[in-house]
Length: 254
Ligand code: NAP
Image 1: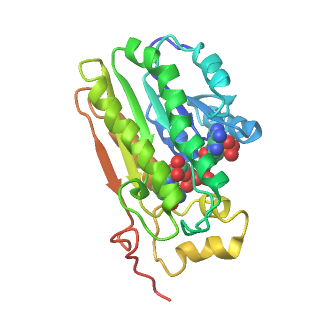
Image 2: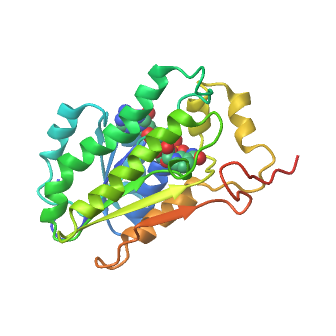
């Protein structure tokens, strides 16, 4: 998978939402993108679309929580320019008193251990590139809590801490660590997944909000951060819609 001269970017969770938009934008910015997610048909279709647009993309079905599969995937890379740890999401919005421990475990596995698996497996290739970039898609949920959010907030805090700690530990190596923390982003699947297919509950998340962020808005910040000169490290970029002042203060026109 090494294309001489063309920097390679691996994107997890590229089958929808922010990951798919990031794949399109990094490809347009000149990266050869490697799309990963569990739904092979979706990433293959997106890779075909990107290639038809004259850019370079390949698809590789991968569950980031499967360490053996991640290690196997990583053997394909001698060098790697960018790893975007985007796979993740929320399950449920129950109070601490009644939240399902299984939801908490699954959120920790994908948001934290998935990021850990990918980062550990690909760090040697990122270092070997001479200018590697690790991006962690955390969330404003990783920076302050809200009622009903504890399981997701805890997981995204885990992702944030992973990024912060890794940056301390690898300083002096040619790898930078960038955390992108979006607020409300209206993507097709995030809220539907959170509410297990309940479209009505999912729609309420965005009800009355004039312009939530789009997947493209977030992909733009990821692409901007990755295309800064290598010595410039965007440690943390918090991006919210104008209508959202905090996780709990949202202007709704209802
Ligand atoms: P999304 O459309 O639901 O995308 C989630 C992606 O993660 C999908 O492509 C999914 O693909 C992938 N994924 C889930 N579990 C996986 C696993 N075990 N292995 C590999 N891939 C897995 O949601 P999104 O809105 O684009 O969110 C993307 C990221 O941004 C997430 O980390 C989310 O927590 C974060 N974020 C979202 C928002 C928001 O408001 N939407 C705000 C802040 C942060 P498959 O199902 O095909 O595997």
